[in-house]
Image (cartoon, rainbow over the protein chains, first blue to last red):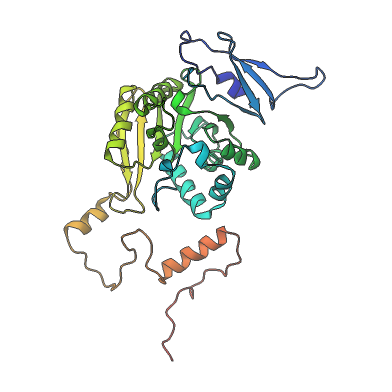
Length: 69
Length: 282
């Protein structure tokens, strides 16, 4: 997932306040010596709900459950 | 992929239909690649993007990145969304330049407002019309898709969605939800008189409503043929109703050679002798 995409992405879950769900906090198990430029594995966390979106092979999984949609 | 046989949407949800095997088959099929590439070209043309700078586009139902490749070729950036992990895996393998998201567009477009300069979608939106889960309501999902898409697009930008509507009711449902969401615009139909070549592009404008572009194959030339007989010296018609060349004609031979070149096979050069009528002898 590129930096630009992360800059634009917000949480899709229903019922958030307008303008909410942004910015998603990036959570990676990164070693301090290796700068993370492109996120391959990790999580994006919504600042309002705490909901985590997993990232796998560089692709964030934004699929919602039935209750969230 | 719709058109021959049953519609894929009837076989099941897209994330199951496009499994690993189907994803691979789809992406390697030269006919599919050609058609998708042509439709992407037409969709980007209909977007009416500014010529002087690269733009950020959204690709809805990007799949394995066939349409995205064309966007990259034109020098634009793109972010793609698709519901099938298998298709996205193929896109990663093919090292597409755009960024990918695993998402269901029926749940909305998860971006900040006004970020995209345009949106294209090739052969995807008709999947939203089928309820794949008990909780699905197609009109609601379509409205959620269109309203969030409207928000995510910049003012003055467009969304061009190529789709395969099953019937006119589906077409009306889709268009109605798009209008409800605030879009203006309408349907552009290319080659309306041909069953095979006919393509539907839903052209939606955000904000300023421009004039709807004209569909291909609707120009005077075709229109005249319908109203009066065209007299030519040619005995045979170059193209039949399917939009293909008559078999064995020089056009057909040249097209076939071009197809084989694209497949990477060794083909003789085209010369003045190609497809020339031979002297009739026993």
